[in-house]
Image (tube, rainbow, N blue to C red; front, side, top):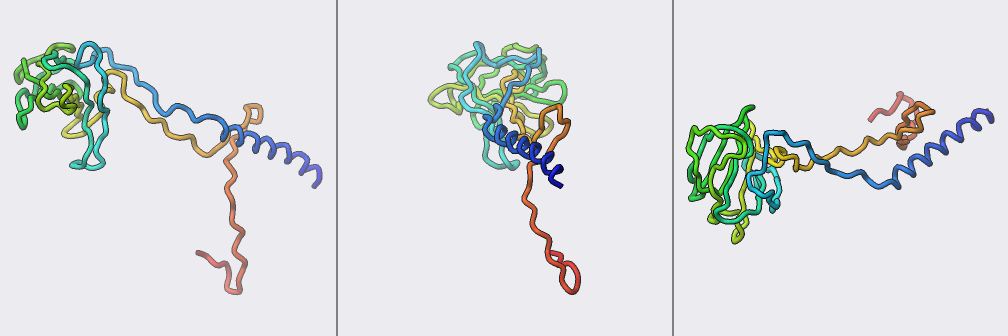
Length: 207
């Protein structure tokens, strides 16, 4: 028995030391950037400031921000991000809106915009769709473009994915510790274990 304890003790000490190192190490960065598709581009030129990011609602009709707001100036030319066909160009509640349908079942939206295209027009990536309006701006009294990306009927996505600027949240590491490679073993973090319930006259006391 003393020999067994002698062999086990160094392993336990190594495990404790590894745990302390993991706890003391700084957490990895929470976000990284995706690579942008070659066909996608920003809808304003030069590259605009992102005034407000994507904040999807928890429920279908709940509050949230179903796109991003990009800083611009009144009258600035608005460009289509990807090649597609104009599905809508008009006004909604007095605000100019352009919707372009793309391959794969997605649509991009641009507002407030005074449209220079019509329904059915076929566009290449970077073609103009209209001019930025001040009325209806989410950033009023500043002028900004609300840019949206929709998949299917009403599944909103972050349009910054199209240009490689959307954050990607990394999941936290599982509560396990990988010991040095020469040990070739993955040990879980010790979890306190309750003592077994004493045997009673009628058997085990299950809960």
